[in-house]
Image (tube, rainbow, N blue to C red):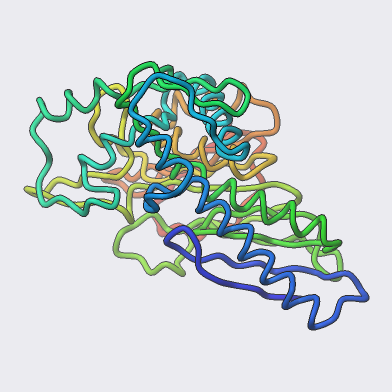
Length: 327
């Protein structure tokens, strides 16, 4: 069993892989270098933190004329627009101006919320239908539209690493970037890879889990409001922005985990679930083939868990009181 790790996209990655029988230590080192190269390319394509990335250049293209994007950038933007369509706009990659305004991008954290008129001015630039993909060409309907792929790029990075491993003849693997995971094959002995869902509490250790579950040839992504936020006047402001209001979401859903065939889809849908809430979100997931979700709400009585019927069977670690339902 090979265990490879590194840093990417402002977080860490890990790969647990069952190599081909004839693999050597030099093969392991070469694979590690190839993984780093793949993830470096994803960053170079889609990072908003790099001013010379393909996506940053598109954002700096202050015009409605076509922009010749790299194929991978156009592919992920198109995937994002498809997810926006499926979630009635809850997943929206044009939230860049609002993400920065609320202090969740490279411009630094806020100490207090922005004025509402400023929020609404930024919101006027937002809307997933303001971006179009024509082959590998990207086009804006207004020059100051700003695209941010942070809600899907880690998942896409996971998928690209999985593709690389399969091309290199790896028998089975579990790939993780910043908590987003995908597996293929089985561990030695035929056992499933097991993954965990973090306990959705800001005071909990990163290692504390709410659930554990087997992940067989699927991807899982989790989105929550309990790590990335700021507080002002005893109110928490999450990094999850509702496109319909321009403000951080304000409900009791604290974590949403989505299982899907690929990690980019799981990543984007998990973010959308935090925007939509458990009722609307569950209905959307149930309408999609091969997609399931687990929702955790934090109420005055404790954690309340709901899941779609097809979500993998979990081992639960949630502190009492908690209630679980599946319909």
